[in-house]
Length: 383
Ligand code: FAD
Image 1 (cartoon, rainbow, N blue to C red):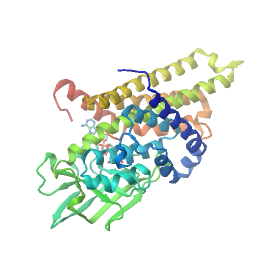
Image 2: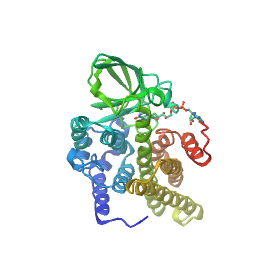
Image 3: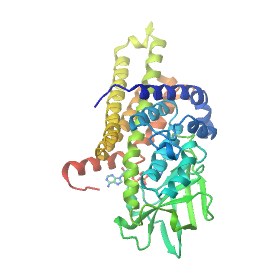
Image 4: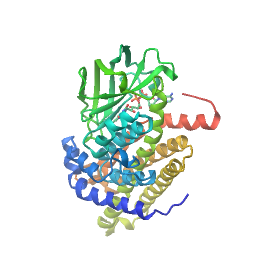
């Protein structure tokens, strides 16, 4: 694996850094306090090509490889995880899945909007009663002539209130495949689909997270993504790549934690010198730095495997597991460096910690990643 970035990769990272500094950093505290990112950011992300990375230009994408995608995701995560999550879901979980599994008609219908930022996608897998055991989902799609009629509830859906299209997973009657789950592309304005914003989140407060209720939602059979019954495989393959994106976002959080902690340690004076002079403060900084490097290398390895067409799912679980736990540790260590100032939101460490915490929960909790890794090591499924 080549750890040198190509000229193109370096350029895209610089573009992302400049974008974050210009469009995100000035607003981060206000968006967090208001519990809402300015939606105009979506079109700006589209304009600069960040919603089309790895998608063919033919469908409005901006091309690029998965390492470039990781670099952009890291920079966005360094700026604001709420914004990073918009991209990880609308591009990472929805557009990339449509590109991989969609019919020509579905790609032409959905990808240009998703990649330009004219529309937003969300990924509807989790339900109130089924989280880690996603295969037990109970949302039902019943065939009725040329349509499916869908009933059920989806919980904790990132971009849920903003979305124009829901990549929805439902148990379809008569589906022959694994667990009988099928994937559907459901326009969010379809009658019978209602959404409720979930407020009071510990972190990612700027993000539009919603509960979706589907009552007799009627979609044509052409809304089926991939074959009937292939939905669980589609969800799992989307999440395998999605975990790399979460891991890259976590590297961004850890890097931000390092940046702010080193700077503060060089400014704050106690006992007659800057706290950078105290060995135990250096220990905190050194621990953060180690977490940043290790998380980044694990994440880049996944990108490298994907770009070379190699199996990557277990490595993606390892990267997500390590990077998410590392981001929590790094943000917590940074908060410690800030002392009492770390505890108030005029300083950045507290938000980094709040935003990091969910990374160990979604797209498979840390326990679930360990079971994926354990199954690969032993051949035994311990779920
Ligand atoms: P549970 O599955 O009930 O787990 C509870 C605890 O039990 C956890 O500690 C878990 O690790 C443990 N556990 C469960 N089973 C096992 C086992 N077999 N062995 C050991 N331990 C186990 N979902 C979507 O579909 N789309 C989204 O866009 C989305 N965005 C989200 C955004 C946010 C802010 C949040 C909080 C969640 C989001 N989710 C989304 C849902 C998320 O993926 C689930 O919350 C997650 O998968 C865990 O499910 P759960 O919350 O039901 O916890």
